[in-house]
Length: 291
Image 1: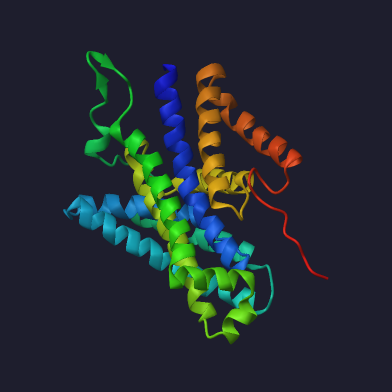
Image 2: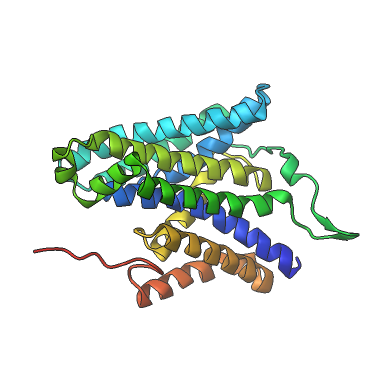
């Protein structure tokens, strides 16, 4: 593999992790909880698109319906595995979301099967050429980072420039004060989880044509995305974007240089080293608690 295709592939994969990790950022910023079923949301997006396309749905309609379904799944996660525990000021939501993700993964394995399937895409069929030279990359490799950056910028503008976004910021700063001001705190938190899950679903759809669609694909995606979220700083969207691109590039360079068998070792060692130097992540800030 040449260096340019490797780097672009790394940026694309890093952007997939970044999209999922942005979901962790959104929910953590709003209510301090994260959805450890995020990987399942990514898997759900890919599987649902595959199933609907195979059933004869037009691809754009299948994509839109799958995004909505992933958003609804996020609402279910919030209602069943987050809200009851936040109300009791318990952190058992951590295990509850993991359990719900496992339920989703196994349910989809029964429906979809355990065998990997291919999802065809016109953006991942013909590689890009420069004259007579085949660059070894597909248009989808270039599209994925653009999608992540566009959605990250859109989320940033939404939170700072719209009433619903300002409501999310208010809930993030002080839920009790936000409720007194008439903000529907429960609905804001639910919306954050719906948006978070939809982002993961989009990530799953984007990566599927470059790999395979399978019911277990969300496990690794969710784990790496959480590593990216911690590496960038859960409280910083642009920190997560930076960490995602860095993580993807390191993966690509390690795979190119010393082999894929060392990829996980080196990338997660990188996370440990960075956090040892900057415990709050690349662009994260330490939270100040009043006592």
